[in-house]
Image (cartoon, rainbow over all chains, first blue to last red; front, side, top):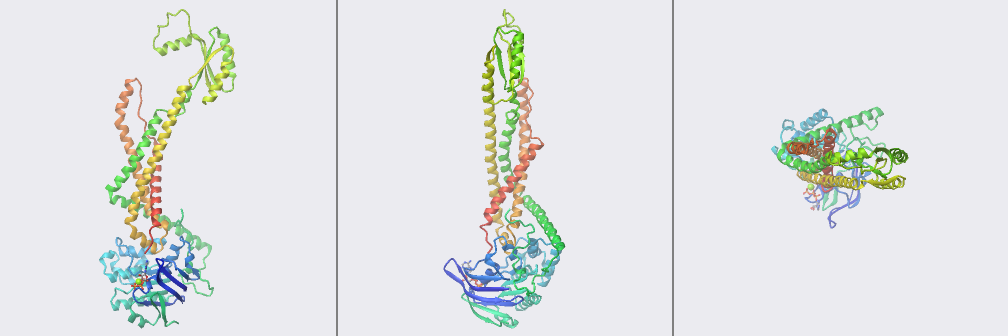
Length: 222
Length: 347
Ligand SMILES: Nc1ncnc2c1ncn2[C@@H]1O[C@H](COP(=O)(O)OP(=O)(O)OP(=O)(O)O)[C@@H](O)[C@H]1O
Ligand SMILES: [Mg+2]
């Protein structure tokens, strides 16, 4: 599903955020990405989303070198990836319901069908009763769950999550991870960047460890 | 448009086109589709597209209404920019300067020699009429000429004391072409006829009128173009600010796969609404100006013994004005958003 081939990423020409990355993630796999702050986890996910292009090497997703995608194709590529952002990226002047339905609106899903799917997604993250609230009225953890609901609402083939449990208590974190596992079980490829070493050790999935932009360990690979 | 949101079949569908044939398709939609289901897909996308247009039109209208004062000022600026060239155009139109009617006055007068008698004059007129570039002729006898002359002076009997009529018989010629060069040529030809004393053509004032009309037309068009540019700038600047204020939202929707067309749409509708509002205000202002000026103008005209009413935009004119302003608003928004979007990159 995802292949990094000799990938390097420089910001501003000098600083190397990522270097010599070589790995593959199979279809339907669930992978954790760990590493110290600034190790390059978010940068790696941004490469997969094609928010950035690699300075060196190729990022191949489902057989396509995504650097080759034309600018007009990128939106259609992104629609197939659900992303939970480290900083949520919610719209603060729209209700929770509206925030979650945004991807469906962009894809032109019929409103009644969209409403059904939005409620199902909100139900999964336990926020159905807050659908009319504004993000500002929610706690950090609740906002994060709204972000998760938005990422899964259109049943993407690939799910990327950047610190999805960063603001959650242990119980809720475990619930959210279980939710990701559910998605993984129905065939979604899942990639999660996380600091929470204790939690991800419990879950027994493959772990990619980054340090200073390099892949230093690849544990538990199938 | 570069990237329309219309149902282009997901070209970026990288994830749905696995290289390995054995690989199970991951997407929830089946990869094999019949022509029929493709057709329903297309029509459902078309519906989705129409839905988005409707909702954006409504949404941007509501945004206008939410900040009535600022938006009204923008529309007023547009209206003022439209009123000036429109009023000039109307004035020219009412002065018939834009009309072909003044061409009627383009005639030649052929004066025959004083010794010519009526029968000879008849023959000369026939000969003149036979010329190819002559449309019509009218023979004016010496008596008629005198009568018209007296009438035009408003002195009925002042010349009655004259012993003999000093005026020659004349022929008024309507040429088929009123081009100055053609008329001059015709004049030269007619002058060579025997029995013809002199050919006069009143080119000078026809020319002058034409030039004046052309000048007016050009000034109106130049003003129109200039003020049209002004409308573009006003709308463009307003839209630029509103793009800036919604920058965050744009970034987010682009992160989750919105096309440029999708992002542009609400702003294009805002621009079009500004145009519609500005156009309507301009029509209102023109009507108001007409009302305000009509009384003194009518009084003025009456003092000359004429009846004259100020010109008004008819339905066609109003439609044209409104379409132009809407189009200008839309275009201004398009330029502003397109220019601005390239500077917005999702973070
Ligand atoms: N747009 C950017 N311009 C310049 N440098 C950047 C940019 N984005 C990231 N970096 C740098 O790249 C390095 C990796 O950043 P990244 O955000 O990927 O780290 P991370 O592993 O996600 O950290 P954290 O756990 O704190 O989120 C950092 O040193 C950061 O300063
Ligand atoms: Mg990060």
